[in-house]
Image 1 (cartoon, rainbow, N blue to C red):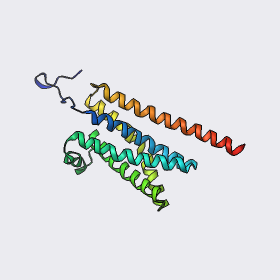
Image 2: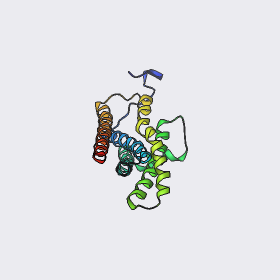
Image 3: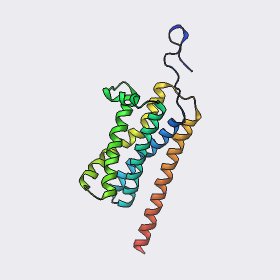
Image 4: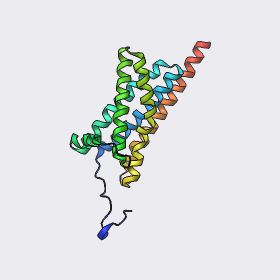
Length: 185
């Protein structure tokens, strides 16, 4: 339901998002969850999982903004978000979160893959891990702000991202339990 504004016109124009946004939500949610998982794995000493989750987070945080820019149509629309930090704008805050988390995840993944700068990797991984939940959830704030519950594509993509994250998490638990039994026996 759209609130009527002046002269019976809606206060906010309805969004004209395309399919890229559904994929943007999926990759952003997966990247945010993977950032948290990478940090948790690093803290628990599971280097293999930390490496995989770090690379996955960096990949998702590379693809996600590209999909957003494609939906916006012109890269300068995305770049305009960085002229100022505006707390009252969910899109502005989200753009800043996405860029800082993406940079941190990219640095962590580069250090992870090359095996260089372990301290830099740790700092970047902590930053990406702490920004993981906002990356994965800020779009919900944006939806509420824009009242954009018009398309089932977005709910489906978000649900798929959550399901995939849960599957990866459960497989990790099973793998850890199996490795633990193999080391004991």
